[in-house]
Length: 202
Image: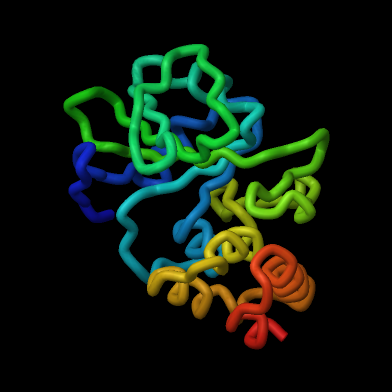
């Protein structure tokens, strides 16, 4: 893990084992996301990470906030500002990211991302037509850590890939089976139009 400075204080991401321990008692679905999810899927680490992401369903936001009542939770209000998330407050639909730290003098440790759901289905916030049963949204590592399925994580990275996203795609591509490739290519095309990754997936 690397320490990164931001205008709102330093990031020093929690280790995945610590994230799993902190969230072990929560009774709603959650998944490690971002580059860490890709590494869990391929089974090895291949790059540095400036943060650690956890995906939650928006409807479960207050359950998880209550799990760590002594922590600070800050909502990333668009465009590009942070504000304290008050206990018991329900965040509006335009807030997708929450920064978390143990206290005001501590570095940021976990980034929570919120996504949509309806009944038993996950709904992409990028394109409401892209859905998947919640119980098929992720996988579990050998250590039992839930993580977002590679095709779902890569879908989010495909809109405007950064160098680290291209690195994640190259690492994940050999491990994707035919069904995962088809789902990802279809989702990318439906949400963003044709993208260079689609040709490689086919």
